[in-house]
Amino acid sequence: MAATQLVFAIFCFGIAGSLRMPDRNLLDVRSRIIVTAAKEVGVREKTGQNDGKAIAEYLRSVGLNRPEPYCAAFVCWVFQKEGLSKPRSGWSPDLFPQSRLARSALPGNVIGIYFPQLKRIAHAGLIEKVDGSWISTIEANTNVSGSREGDGVYRKKRHFRTIYRIADWIDLGGH
Image (cartoon, rainbow, N blue to C red; front, side):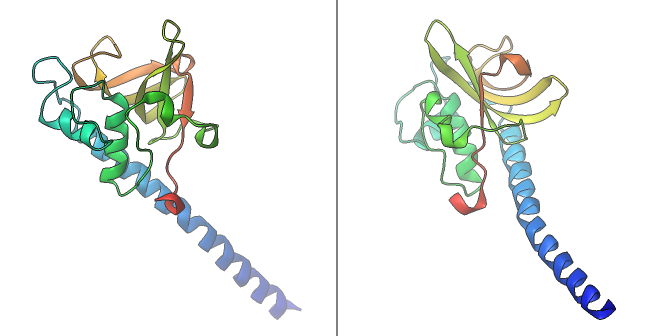
């Protein structure tokens, strides 16, 4: 009986250990996404017209070849740099399909800010960390005041209640 229990315990330990491995991999992907995004903090537009070498690269990553708002393109560019094929859109509402909505805020998840005058999500960024009711983000096409028509890539601190949607695009099976 003791031998059977020992074998069963080893089996369960092995199963539990193998189930945890993807979590470590997902945490690693989340960390790499934040590191990649953080390296872009400080990028600024060349002339204030959604332009410049890095901004053009963000836009090209989603198939846009002329100056456009680039917050969503930046998010997609970061994911592509880390080997994930999705999301892939320059339009911020596309980053929040029902199937990707998250129940919690985790580093690497995508935030959506709703603009009532546009009646839609009109700005997106990446969660860097969560501290109680505050979410630290890395966002592109913003500025010091948090505009959706900014001049570069910034770190922002937003209260949780100002976030309209959170999407989780990190899964190792979908890349």
